[in-house]
Image 1 (cartoon, rainbow, N blue to C red):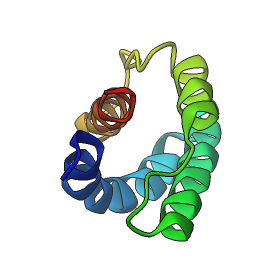
Image 2: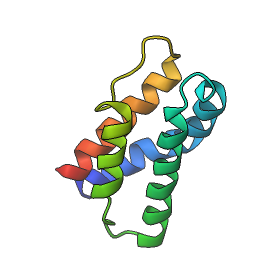
Image 3: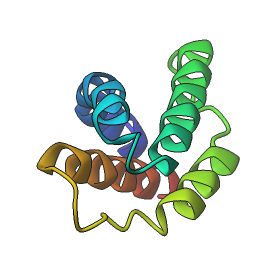
Length: 97
């Protein structure tokens, strides 16, 4: 299995749970997270459409890096928010490998 495939299996189940919750809880004070959720949803759609293949996600990861300031965690958020950024960063890194 590829590095990305392993990261995908490891992080996506948690991200699918956490991203909507973080958007609901932190979206009002961190509206940029709504954009993170939108890009995450685009990534999920491409992954589902690709099946076992590696889809083209360069543009989506570039958007995530821009929105999040290279996955910089804001100082006033919960551990789950931080975990989402860390998992997205790991997924991005594995994709680029």
